[in-house]
Amino acid sequence: MHLRLWVIASVLAGHIWIAAAAEYRVCVSNERSGTVSIISGGDGRVLKEIAVGKRPRGIHASSNGSVLYVAVSGSPISGPPKLDANGNPIPEKDEDDESADHSADGIAVINLEKMEFERKLPAGSDPEEFAVMPNNVDLLISNEDVGTASILNTINGKVEAIIPVKREPEGVALSPNRKQVYVTCEAGGEVFVIDLGTHKITGSFVVGGRPRTVAFSPKGDRAYVPSESNGQLHLIDAEHFVVLKTLRLPAGYRPMGTAMDEKGEKFYVSTGRAGCVAVIDALELKLLNSIKVGTRPWGIALSPDGERLFVANGPSDDISVIDTKTEKEIARWKAGAGPWGLCVAPGTGKRLSAR
Image (cartoon, rainbow, N blue to C red; front, side, top):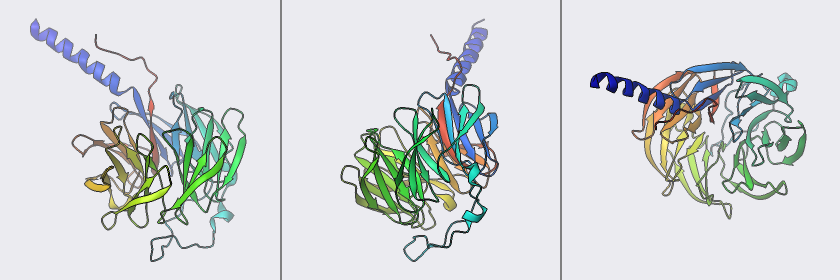
């Protein structure tokens, strides 16, 4: 009898754990297949694969997890640019404009409760990355081929502001104070700081080497910017917009996506062709560990409890799952063709809890 009760209790406990783990979903943009994979955070099951349009890349959920936004683009996929001696891209004649299908550009909107594509919103030319603004209505979007950032109202579908930056803007990151957005520009390595109240540029700095993303300390006093092509990470004074320290990673590392832990003690960086995730001491800006993952990791995100790190492996069409306590890859989950970006969104099912 006691054994039977123990088994029943264990099974129930298991159900509780699975339900709690499944309360979030890993949402993956698949650049080559034109889809988004919605994956259970509990067991890695693909709940649904949703067609969204051409070349989906940037992907973010609304703060309440009810809506998923995905940047789609009709610009063709191209290889990495040639680099000069300093690791900066060499400007070339843009041949993509002739073959680009700008009618495909926009922001795809997915209803996460129904897991269905709803509509596509205009977003300026060639949207790549974006951030959801604090009002949960506006998006600030990087328009790669025209050197601007645009602000899109997702309710009325209108582009309400266009902010010129520099060539090939890519990364977009909302600061912890929710008053500023950082936009990184690949071609010249500039980073621009946009004030959300005025929609004006209030600061800038240069790191070079194709900056891709930005991570922030929890207080927002420090920012971290990777330079992909020269294999560097930069610590930024986020109050005065100056580079405080630069770390050169091992040869072959191409730092791209970033994810900061909740305490701000360390952050994780995907390294592209190096095929690993770098674990970085955020206070000292030094390399602590390298975790082997799949082929050319790019998008990266932490689970809500910080115990799992998810990494999109583009050419291998899968997601690496890392245990952040042991700093080891514990699973590979299948995605669509060419996973590029990913984000973690809350689930919509009823929560089970132990009492």
